[in-house]
Structures are given as structure tokens and as C-alpha cells.
Image (tube, rainbow, N blue to C red; front, side, top):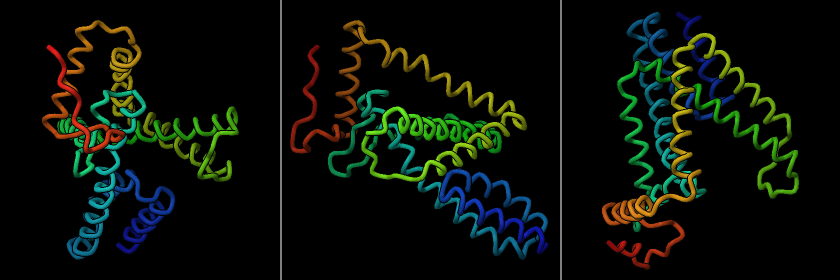
Length: 239
């Protein structure tokens, strides 16, 4: 019992040091909780179960605050519909982005929890590793760009190596889950090609886009962040 408990504490503490409060902690918490409690019995469950549950809830709370704003940032850059960058006129909450996040989350409820964790963790670390790799590439190709935060080159290199490990190992141990993650990621390419890559859209498509954007503003009471809150909403599209 002591051996299992100490191993779990070591794993838990190590992940906090390496990854901080990231999405890997809820996943590992789910995986470790069942094994430890089965081996240690009811007494240990009274100690570990509340702490594990509290840690998972804290991390998931942070994820809920950040995931919706990823859609908001993408919409600001023109990669997603502009309405996803809108915020509430008084609460400053990105309601459209949060609704999209909630809808996508509900669509994933049918899968097994561990398959879902493996699938999304693979996509997560693949995306993060690619983003950090892009920063290294920009440091080499465009060294004069303003960088408010500077770290030694060894830090992102070590981080990328860790991401490579977290991507390659699931591909070997869980090929089905990682394959589904790849398919989910690639499914966004046709949507991007239609919404962003296709510049000269027919007039009727642009009209539908304007009407839907106006309807979202009216229903959710949201405006673009750059728009002054005392200004009227977008003018109603002509029919």
C-alpha cells in the first residue's frame, strides 16, 4: 500500500512540475485514481478521492475558461466566422465561442472516456508541439520580431522532445484512438477551404453569412471587441 501510494504521489507531483496545471493532470488523475483506490481500500479513498477530484475540477475549470477563447482568437485572425469573436455587451463573455465549445463537447459524449482522453491528448500535444516548433522557426527566419517573453533555446527544444514522445507513444499503444484524432483534425481542412480559402463566394452565400451574423448579435446581445459598446449593432441586412 505504501509503495503504491508513494508512486502515485511521485507521479502526481512530477506532472505538476513538468506540465503545470495542464490537461494531462485530469487525464492522469482519472487513470491513477481507480488503480490506487482499488489497491489501498476504503481508508485511502477517504484521503485521496477528495484531493484527486478537487485537482481535476480545478484543471477542468481552467480548461473551460481557455478553450472557448481559442475559437475567439481564431475568429479574430480570420480563420473562423467573425461571430465567434463577439463578446457580450455587458459581461464581456465570448458567448458564441463558448456555445460552439459546448456543442462540440456534447458531440463527444458517446465515446469511452479513456479512448476520448487518448484521442484528444494526442491532438493536443501534436498541436502544441507544432506551435512551439513554429516559434523556433520564426526565431530563426525572423529574429527581429518583437518578443515580450524570451527564454533560452534549450527550453522549447526540450519541450518539443517531450511533445514528440507524447505523440509517438500513443500512436504505437493506441493506434485506433490516435487515428480517430488524426481524422478529426483533418476534417477541419474542407471547412477551412470553404470558409477561408474560397475568397470569391457567390452573393447568396455572403447574404446568408450577413443574416446569420446579425441574428447571432440580436439573440445573444454580442458585439465585436473592437466595436464601441455604445454603438448600435450591425445594421440589419437588406432583404
